[in-house]
Image (tube, rainbow, N blue to C red; front, side, top):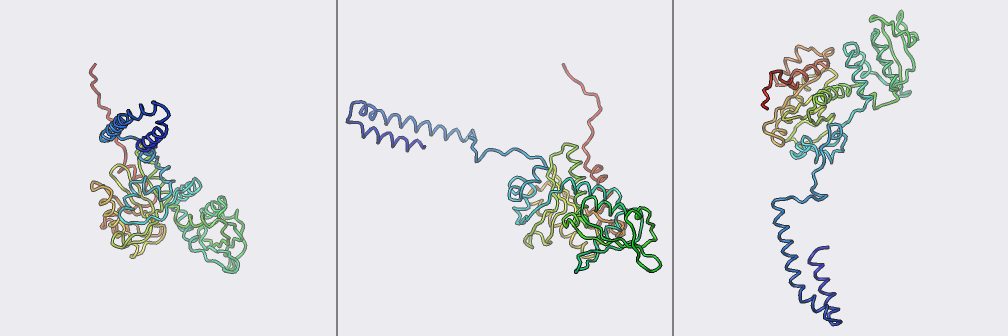
Length: 355
Protein backbone atom coordinates (compact mmCIF):
# COMPACT_ATOMS: atom_id res chain seq x y z
CA UNK A 1 0.00 0.00 0.00
CA UNK A 2 1.32 3.49 -0.85
CA UNK A 3 2.07 5.98 1.98
CA UNK A 4 -0.40 8.73 0.80
CA UNK A 5 -3.24 6.19 0.61
CA UNK A 6 -2.40 4.92 4.09
CA UNK A 7 -2.42 8.44 5.53
CA UNK A 8 -5.78 9.19 3.92
CA UNK A 9 -7.29 6.07 5.49
CA UNK A 10 -5.83 6.89 8.91
CA UNK A 11 -7.21 10.42 8.71
CA UNK A 12 -10.66 9.15 7.77
CA UNK A 13 -10.79 6.59 10.58
CA UNK A 14 -9.60 9.09 13.18
CA UNK A 15 -12.13 11.65 11.99
CA UNK A 16 -14.93 9.12 12.36
CA UNK A 17 -13.89 8.33 15.94
CA UNK A 18 -12.76 11.78 17.08
CA UNK A 19 -15.99 12.50 18.99
CA UNK A 20 -15.70 9.37 21.13
CA UNK A 21 -12.83 10.64 23.26
CA UNK A 22 -9.90 13.02 23.36
CA UNK A 23 -7.70 10.21 21.89
CA UNK A 24 -8.90 10.87 18.35
CA UNK A 25 -8.44 14.64 18.73
CA UNK A 26 -4.93 14.22 20.12
CA UNK A 27 -3.84 11.94 17.25
CA UNK A 28 -5.43 14.25 14.69
CA UNK A 29 -3.43 17.13 16.08
CA UNK A 30 -0.17 15.22 15.59
CA UNK A 31 -1.07 13.64 12.24
CA UNK A 32 0.21 16.55 10.16
CA UNK A 33 3.60 16.22 11.84
CA UNK A 34 3.66 12.44 11.19
CA UNK A 35 2.79 13.01 7.53
CA UNK A 36 5.58 15.60 7.15
CA UNK A 37 8.10 13.16 8.62
CA UNK A 38 7.01 10.30 6.34
CA UNK A 39 7.17 12.53 3.27
CA UNK A 40 10.68 13.60 4.31
CA UNK A 41 11.73 9.92 4.52
CA UNK A 42 10.30 9.22 1.07
CA UNK A 43 12.17 12.22 -0.36
CA UNK A 44 15.44 10.95 1.14
CA UNK A 45 14.87 7.51 -0.40
CA UNK A 46 14.31 9.09 -3.81
CA UNK A 47 17.57 11.01 -3.47
CA UNK A 48 19.40 7.80 -2.56
CA UNK A 49 18.31 6.20 -5.83
CA UNK A 50 20.80 8.44 -7.61
CA UNK A 51 23.57 6.56 -5.80
CA UNK A 52 22.09 3.12 -5.05
CA UNK A 53 20.01 0.98 -7.40
CA UNK A 54 17.32 -0.78 -5.40
CA UNK A 55 17.01 -4.33 -6.76
CA UNK A 56 13.55 -5.53 -7.77
CA UNK A 57 12.36 -8.59 -9.63
CA UNK A 58 12.01 -6.41 -12.72
CA UNK A 59 15.53 -4.92 -12.83
CA UNK A 60 17.52 -7.73 -11.17
CA UNK A 61 20.45 -8.81 -13.33
CA UNK A 62 19.89 -12.28 -14.79
CA UNK A 63 22.58 -14.91 -14.14
CA UNK A 64 25.08 -15.53 -16.93
CA UNK A 65 24.52 -18.70 -18.93
CA UNK A 66 27.01 -21.10 -20.43
CA UNK A 67 27.18 -21.41 -24.21
CA UNK A 68 25.12 -24.62 -24.13
CA UNK A 69 22.48 -23.10 -21.83
CA UNK A 70 22.28 -20.03 -24.04
CA UNK A 71 21.91 -22.07 -27.25
CA UNK A 72 19.04 -24.02 -25.68
CA UNK A 73 16.92 -20.87 -25.21
CA UNK A 74 14.06 -20.05 -27.59
CA UNK A 75 14.63 -17.23 -30.09
CA UNK A 76 12.62 -14.62 -28.15
CA UNK A 77 14.83 -15.11 -25.09
CA UNK A 78 17.99 -15.15 -27.20
CA UNK A 79 17.21 -11.69 -28.54
CA UNK A 80 17.43 -10.40 -24.96
CA UNK A 81 20.21 -12.64 -23.59
CA UNK A 82 22.58 -13.07 -26.55
CA UNK A 83 24.79 -10.19 -27.70
CA UNK A 84 25.14 -11.82 -31.11
CA UNK A 85 21.48 -12.60 -31.78
CA UNK A 86 20.47 -9.29 -30.21
CA UNK A 87 22.74 -7.38 -32.62
CA UNK A 88 21.22 -9.17 -35.61
CA UNK A 89 17.71 -8.41 -34.35
CA UNK A 90 18.46 -4.71 -33.81
CA UNK A 91 19.74 -4.46 -37.38
CA UNK A 92 16.33 -5.54 -38.71
CA UNK A 93 17.07 -9.24 -39.17
CA UNK A 94 14.20 -11.56 -38.19
CA UNK A 95 15.49 -14.75 -36.55
CA UNK A 96 13.12 -17.67 -37.15
CA UNK A 97 14.87 -20.55 -35.41
CA UNK A 98 18.18 -22.20 -34.63
CA UNK A 99 19.21 -25.82 -34.16
CA UNK A 100 20.75 -27.55 -31.17
CA UNK A 101 22.32 -30.83 -32.22
CA UNK A 102 22.16 -33.71 -29.77
CA UNK A 103 24.52 -36.53 -28.81
CA UNK A 104 23.33 -38.80 -31.63
CA UNK A 105 23.99 -36.16 -34.28
CA UNK A 106 27.40 -35.43 -32.75
CA UNK A 107 28.33 -39.12 -32.88
CA UNK A 108 27.24 -39.48 -36.52
CA UNK A 109 29.06 -36.31 -37.57
CA UNK A 110 32.30 -37.41 -35.89
CA UNK A 111 32.08 -40.84 -37.53
CA UNK A 112 31.60 -39.39 -41.02
CA UNK A 113 34.32 -36.75 -40.57
CA UNK A 114 36.82 -39.35 -39.40
CA UNK A 115 36.60 -41.32 -42.68
CA UNK A 116 35.29 -38.58 -44.94
CA UNK A 117 37.48 -39.41 -47.94
CA UNK A 118 35.85 -42.86 -48.02
CA UNK A 119 32.33 -41.64 -47.25
CA UNK A 120 32.18 -38.67 -49.66
CA UNK A 121 31.15 -40.56 -52.82
CA UNK A 122 28.69 -42.73 -50.88
CA UNK A 123 27.08 -39.68 -49.27
CA UNK A 124 26.62 -38.18 -52.70
CA UNK A 125 24.95 -41.40 -53.93
CA UNK A 126 22.70 -41.34 -50.87
CA UNK A 127 21.66 -37.73 -51.57
CA UNK A 128 20.94 -38.63 -55.19
CA UNK A 129 18.92 -41.79 -54.43
CA UNK A 130 15.81 -41.93 -56.61
CA UNK A 131 12.41 -42.82 -55.23
CA UNK A 132 9.71 -45.16 -56.50
CA UNK A 133 6.59 -43.11 -55.74
CA UNK A 134 4.38 -46.20 -55.68
CA UNK A 135 6.37 -48.15 -53.12
CA UNK A 136 8.27 -45.29 -51.41
CA UNK A 137 11.41 -47.37 -51.84
CA UNK A 138 14.59 -45.46 -52.70
CA UNK A 139 17.51 -46.83 -54.70
CA UNK A 140 21.10 -45.67 -54.45
CA UNK A 141 23.72 -46.81 -56.95
CA UNK A 142 27.48 -46.82 -56.42
CA UNK A 143 30.72 -48.62 -57.05
CA UNK A 144 31.80 -51.03 -54.33
CA UNK A 145 34.41 -50.72 -51.66
CA UNK A 146 34.66 -51.69 -48.01
CA UNK A 147 33.41 -48.24 -46.87
CA UNK A 148 29.93 -48.93 -48.27
CA UNK A 149 29.43 -51.61 -45.62
CA UNK A 150 30.42 -49.15 -42.86
CA UNK A 151 28.11 -46.47 -44.24
CA UNK A 152 25.03 -48.70 -44.57
CA UNK A 153 25.78 -50.16 -41.16
CA UNK A 154 25.90 -46.63 -39.70
CA UNK A 155 22.47 -45.88 -41.19
CA UNK A 156 21.05 -49.13 -39.86
CA UNK A 157 22.61 -48.70 -36.43
CA UNK A 158 20.82 -45.37 -35.96
CA UNK A 159 17.60 -46.77 -37.46
CA UNK A 160 17.61 -44.25 -40.28
CA UNK A 161 16.72 -46.76 -42.99
CA UNK A 162 15.46 -50.29 -43.51
CA UNK A 163 17.31 -52.09 -46.27
CA UNK A 164 14.88 -53.90 -48.56
CA UNK A 165 17.26 -55.39 -51.11
CA UNK A 166 20.88 -55.28 -52.24
CA UNK A 167 21.76 -56.01 -55.86
CA UNK A 168 25.11 -56.74 -57.48
CA UNK A 169 25.71 -56.32 -61.20
CA UNK A 170 27.03 -59.56 -62.63
CA UNK A 171 27.32 -60.31 -66.36
CA UNK A 172 25.00 -57.43 -67.24
CA UNK A 173 22.39 -58.72 -64.80
CA UNK A 174 21.42 -57.53 -61.33
CA UNK A 175 21.48 -60.37 -58.82
CA UNK A 176 20.62 -60.43 -55.10
CA UNK A 177 23.51 -59.74 -52.77
CA UNK A 178 23.82 -60.22 -49.00
CA UNK A 179 24.57 -57.29 -46.71
CA UNK A 180 27.46 -59.15 -45.01
CA UNK A 181 29.18 -59.54 -48.40
CA UNK A 182 29.54 -55.78 -48.69
CA UNK A 183 32.55 -56.04 -46.38
CA UNK A 184 34.46 -57.60 -49.27
CA UNK A 185 33.08 -55.45 -52.09
CA UNK A 186 35.70 -54.14 -54.50
CA UNK A 187 35.83 -50.74 -56.19
CA UNK A 188 35.10 -52.34 -59.57
CA UNK A 189 31.79 -53.83 -58.49
CA UNK A 190 28.51 -52.02 -59.21
CA UNK A 191 25.94 -52.21 -56.45
CA UNK A 192 22.44 -51.00 -55.70
CA UNK A 193 20.84 -50.67 -52.29
CA UNK A 194 17.05 -50.40 -52.10
CA UNK A 195 15.75 -48.98 -48.84
CA UNK A 196 12.99 -47.14 -47.01
CA UNK A 197 13.57 -44.14 -44.78
CA UNK A 198 12.46 -44.67 -41.17
CA UNK A 199 13.77 -41.42 -39.72
CA UNK A 200 13.41 -38.47 -42.15
CA UNK A 201 15.10 -36.06 -39.73
CA UNK A 202 18.30 -38.08 -39.38
CA UNK A 203 18.20 -38.92 -43.08
CA UNK A 204 18.31 -35.21 -43.89
CA UNK A 205 21.14 -34.85 -41.37
CA UNK A 206 23.22 -37.36 -43.36
CA UNK A 207 22.56 -35.34 -46.51
CA UNK A 208 24.44 -32.26 -45.30
CA UNK A 209 23.77 -31.07 -41.76
CA UNK A 210 26.38 -33.46 -40.37
CA UNK A 211 29.08 -31.07 -41.66
CA UNK A 212 27.44 -28.16 -39.85
CA UNK A 213 27.14 -30.18 -36.63
CA UNK A 214 30.77 -31.28 -36.77
CA UNK A 215 32.03 -27.74 -37.38
CA UNK A 216 29.97 -26.38 -34.47
CA UNK A 217 31.20 -29.20 -32.26
CA UNK A 218 34.86 -28.39 -33.00
CA UNK A 219 34.41 -24.67 -32.27
CA UNK A 220 32.48 -25.27 -29.04
CA UNK A 221 34.90 -27.93 -27.82
CA UNK A 222 37.97 -25.75 -28.34
CA UNK A 223 36.48 -22.70 -26.65
CA UNK A 224 35.06 -24.74 -23.75
CA UNK A 225 38.36 -26.55 -23.14
CA UNK A 226 40.18 -23.22 -23.00
CA UNK A 227 37.48 -21.73 -20.76
CA UNK A 228 36.74 -18.93 -23.18
CA UNK A 229 33.20 -17.53 -22.71
CA UNK A 230 31.40 -17.69 -26.05
CA UNK A 231 28.12 -17.80 -27.91
CA UNK A 232 27.93 -20.45 -30.62
CA UNK A 233 24.84 -21.19 -32.70
CA UNK A 234 24.11 -23.59 -35.55
CA UNK A 235 21.65 -23.31 -38.44
CA UNK A 236 20.35 -19.87 -37.50
CA UNK A 237 17.50 -19.33 -39.95
CA UNK A 238 16.80 -15.69 -40.72
CA UNK A 239 15.03 -13.24 -43.00
CA UNK A 240 16.20 -9.68 -43.46
CA UNK A 241 15.30 -6.57 -45.44
CA UNK A 242 17.25 -6.57 -48.72
CA UNK A 243 19.07 -3.40 -47.70
CA UNK A 244 20.43 -5.17 -44.59
CA UNK A 245 21.29 -8.70 -45.77
CA UNK A 246 20.40 -9.38 -49.39
CA UNK A 247 20.73 -13.15 -49.15
CA UNK A 248 17.93 -15.19 -47.55
CA UNK A 249 19.15 -18.33 -45.91
CA UNK A 250 20.78 -19.27 -42.63
CA UNK A 251 24.08 -19.08 -40.82
CA UNK A 252 25.39 -22.63 -40.65
CA UNK A 253 27.65 -21.89 -37.68
CA UNK A 254 28.29 -18.53 -36.05
CA UNK A 255 30.33 -17.99 -32.90
CA UNK A 256 31.23 -14.92 -30.84
CA UNK A 257 33.98 -14.78 -28.24
CA UNK A 258 35.93 -11.82 -26.91
CA UNK A 259 35.86 -9.26 -29.76
CA UNK A 260 35.78 -11.91 -32.48
CA UNK A 261 33.04 -13.45 -34.59
CA UNK A 262 33.60 -16.56 -36.70
CA UNK A 263 31.04 -17.48 -39.34
CA UNK A 264 31.09 -20.81 -41.21
CA UNK A 265 29.29 -21.72 -44.42
CA UNK A 266 29.21 -25.51 -44.88
CA UNK A 267 28.81 -26.95 -48.39
CA UNK A 268 28.75 -30.74 -48.63
CA UNK A 269 28.01 -30.83 -52.38
CA UNK A 270 29.40 -29.37 -55.57
CA UNK A 271 30.01 -25.60 -55.40
CA UNK A 272 28.74 -23.67 -58.41
CA UNK A 273 29.52 -20.12 -59.58
CA UNK A 274 26.18 -18.87 -58.22
CA UNK A 275 27.09 -20.27 -54.78
CA UNK A 276 30.34 -18.29 -54.75
CA UNK A 277 28.53 -15.00 -55.34
CA UNK A 278 25.93 -15.72 -52.64
CA UNK A 279 28.56 -16.72 -50.07
CA UNK A 280 30.67 -13.62 -50.74
CA UNK A 281 27.59 -11.39 -50.47
CA UNK A 282 26.51 -12.99 -47.21
CA UNK A 283 30.01 -12.53 -45.76
CA UNK A 284 30.05 -8.82 -46.58
CA UNK A 285 26.53 -8.21 -45.28
CA UNK A 286 26.97 -9.95 -41.93
CA UNK A 287 30.29 -8.19 -41.31
CA UNK A 288 28.63 -4.82 -41.94
CA UNK A 289 25.70 -5.61 -39.62
CA UNK A 290 27.78 -6.92 -36.71
CA UNK A 291 30.33 -4.10 -36.93
CA UNK A 292 27.54 -1.54 -36.76
CA UNK A 293 25.32 -3.12 -34.11
CA UNK A 294 27.78 -5.13 -32.01
CA UNK A 295 31.19 -3.42 -31.98
CA UNK A 296 33.30 -1.36 -34.34
CA UNK A 297 36.37 -3.08 -32.84
CA UNK A 298 35.03 -6.46 -33.93
CA UNK A 299 37.30 -8.93 -35.73
CA UNK A 300 35.18 -10.85 -38.24
CA UNK A 301 36.28 -13.99 -40.08
CA UNK A 302 34.26 -15.96 -42.63
CA UNK A 303 35.05 -19.56 -43.56
CA UNK A 304 33.82 -21.96 -46.21
CA UNK A 305 33.88 -25.67 -45.27
CA UNK A 306 33.68 -27.78 -48.42
CA UNK A 307 34.06 -31.27 -49.86
CA UNK A 308 37.45 -31.50 -51.59
CA UNK A 309 36.47 -34.89 -53.04
CA UNK A 310 33.75 -33.26 -55.15
CA UNK A 311 35.46 -29.92 -55.81
CA UNK A 312 38.88 -28.85 -57.06
CA UNK A 313 40.54 -27.82 -53.80
CA UNK A 314 43.17 -25.56 -55.34
CA UNK A 315 40.63 -23.60 -57.40
CA UNK A 316 38.16 -23.26 -54.52
CA UNK A 317 40.81 -22.09 -52.03
CA UNK A 318 42.27 -19.58 -54.50
CA UNK A 319 38.95 -18.18 -55.64
CA UNK A 320 37.58 -17.64 -52.14
CA UNK A 321 40.91 -16.26 -50.93
CA UNK A 322 40.49 -13.30 -53.30
CA UNK A 323 37.14 -12.65 -51.59
CA UNK A 324 38.66 -12.63 -48.09
CA UNK A 325 37.15 -16.01 -47.25
CA UNK A 326 39.20 -18.96 -46.03
CA UNK A 327 38.11 -22.25 -47.66
CA UNK A 328 38.82 -25.39 -45.63
CA UNK A 329 38.29 -29.12 -45.88
CA UNK A 330 36.40 -30.63 -42.96
CA UNK A 331 39.63 -32.21 -41.68
CA UNK A 332 41.31 -28.79 -41.53
CA UNK A 333 38.80 -27.04 -39.27
CA UNK A 334 40.22 -28.22 -35.94
CA UNK A 335 43.78 -27.27 -36.88
CA UNK A 336 42.68 -23.82 -38.03
CA UNK A 337 40.83 -23.17 -34.76
CA UNK A 338 43.78 -24.39 -32.71
CA UNK A 339 46.43 -22.50 -34.69
CA UNK A 340 44.67 -19.16 -34.96
CA UNK A 341 42.62 -19.05 -31.76
CA UNK A 342 44.77 -20.87 -29.23
CA UNK A 343 45.11 -19.52 -25.71
CA UNK A 344 48.71 -18.38 -25.01
CA UNK A 345 50.68 -20.68 -22.72
CA UNK A 346 51.57 -19.32 -19.27
CA UNK A 347 54.96 -17.63 -19.16
CA UNK A 348 57.79 -19.78 -17.78
CA UNK A 349 59.92 -16.76 -16.89
CA UNK A 350 60.85 -16.53 -13.19
CA UNK A 351 58.69 -14.20 -11.16
CA UNK A 352 60.23 -12.03 -8.45
CA UNK A 353 58.17 -12.06 -5.29
CA UNK A 354 58.78 -9.36 -2.68
CA UNK A 355 58.16 -10.39 0.89
